Image (tube, rainbow, N blue to C red; front, side, top):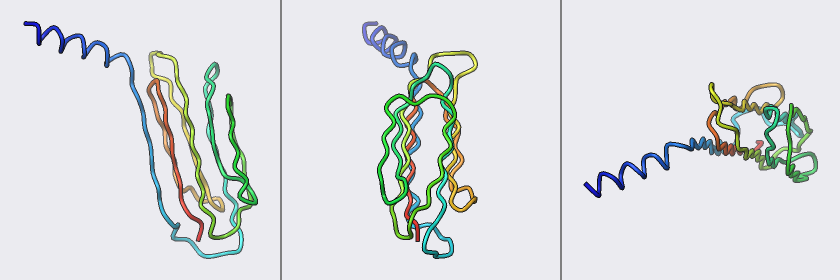
Length: 131
């Protein structure tokens, strides 16, 4: 009976949170080699939510946004051969229906990833290498 009670308490404690993790490394993209590429990062952080974001910009500059909220759409010209990384960490409030974050990464206008994550704890990690 004690084991059942402990199991019940563990289930109750863990059912209150929903963690969404997306972690993908695409490696080198299979696209035509050029000197530079247009890399576009797009996401929308819901009102009242603050996200931590990390991304690579032009000249291999690394950007870190500590408390970003709202629509995010940035395009950078990045040289061939560079490693690209885009991360988002956010805690969404518990709502019905569940809140979500939709994220798109494009290279020269072509979608490389298009992901929607829902839950209360969002961790998005996407990386690739330009040819």
